[in-house]
Image (cartoon, rainbow, N blue to C red; front, side, top):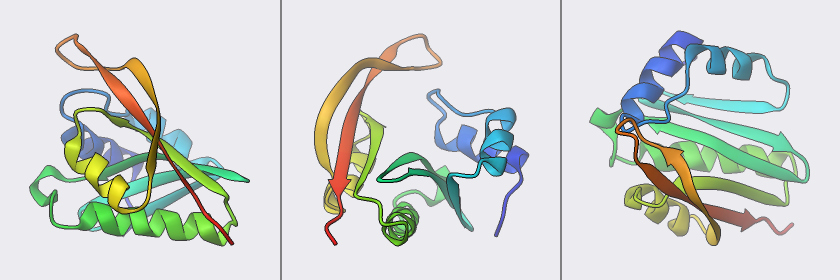
Length: 140
């Protein structure tokens, strides 16, 4: 399944209802960028930017009605497979410090916490949240 920028923005807004959802314009730009890999699933999608020897997971969005059912794990595994095919050495991302489910998912996939960005996220209510930096190294 491939989504349009409008569909991706709508799903992203549902998945990130606290704030930080990307716009249709953001997704239009991603869809034409050369170094982006976008994995689609019936209930979500994920975006990876590959700039060898690194890759960055930009987002994994799963429809809230299907969260906790393994779809995020499937998308993460697909992103990691694409990174390995590109011979990426390190893959990294930021995750909201309060997103315990995502943090557990990344930990179970072998990601390590490497840093903290204070007040990185701004929520709809005006509050700020910290980002945990995570990374994983692939050995070939």
